[in-house]
Length: 154
Image (cartoon, rainbow, N blue to C red; front, side, top):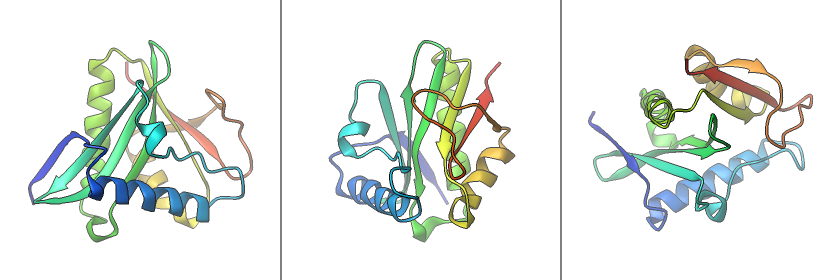
């Protein structure tokens, strides 16, 4: 399987559909007020870079990094299309985002995610890559549901 990871075209309908699917899934799987998935306008912000993974002509996954400051980035909107699960696509995308964070001179990448069965595959991906649970960052507040993970890039 040949993957192409490149900056996403946010006007591409496949990209938009996967973003919408991600948002619906996060809202459905999170307590009220505890889903922080960015919508299309949030992903269009100047400090956000969005990537798409293409397999042939299909968008297989999306992921983004929000630049928080000169030393820290936040991984956002990681989602693999259901047709492409468990094929290593999310791992490849995560590696590309981490490589870009390093190239940008960031010291840490962090993320906020939920808890429970729906979040276990993502948590396994991040923990297998070396992310560890830690304190809240940015505007997040830890709850019984959400958690923050961090990866030092040193």
